[in-house]
Amino acid sequence: MSIRRMTLEDVSAVAALDKMSFSLPWPERSFRFELTDNPASRCWVYDLDGKIVGMIVAWLLVDEVHIATIATHPEHRKQGIARELLTYALRYMSMEGAVTSFLEVRESNLAAQEMYRKFGYEESGRRKRYYKDTNEDAILMTLTGLESLNSKNY
Ligand SMILES: CC(C)(COP(=O)(O)OP(=O)(O)OC[C@H]1O[C@@H](n2cnc3c(N)ncnc32)[C@H](O)[C@@H]1OP(=O)(O)O)[C@@H](O)C(=O)NCCC(=O)NCCS
Image (tube, rainbow, N blue to C red; front, side):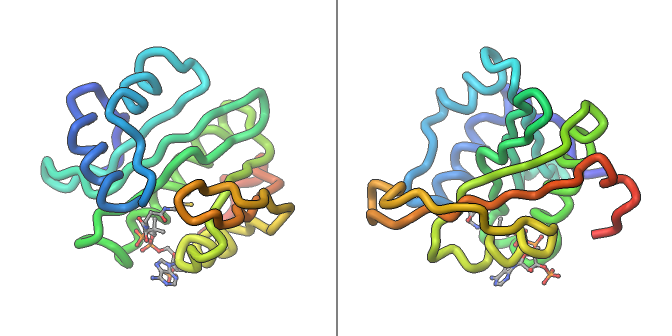
């Protein structure tokens, strides 16, 4: 199993990966906050022989999972890593009682949208000019039925 909980020792590698993946990356202190001060937060990394090649941060808010961030190292994309991370996180939180999941994604981010659609996420709204660097809209996507997740095979 290459997926494990993120620790404080992972934060600099995770922040570096985040920086390679997003035009508005999180500062290191945000990842530290998630690990130490946010009880809703669940953070995992994909550890390939000591190299952090994927990460996911999700928040469990009562029975809803909000995917806060997910990324795969550019050299390791299209190998199923994000799919494994998202599957793991959703299964884990469905066992904690989650029944729905939601997230925001840039309208230009077709790769991520494609992945989410494969999981069954559907567009449920838009946030106008949500991303401050490009003024792009965020597409809000929602997935229901997490309670039956264990029987689904993504
Ligand atoms: C989006 C991202 C997380 C996908 O990570 P990944 O590990 O390459 O994805 P996977 O290999 O697990 O692919 C899962 C599915 O995503 C879709 N997908 C992934 N990359 C894709 C691409 N370049 N184009 C189209 N669809 C793509 C496919 O449907 C794929 O399913 P398949 O393997 O059956 O074809 C990765 O491209 C990334 O880190 N991007 C930058 C950060 C980001 O945009 N995060 C999401 C924010 S909302």
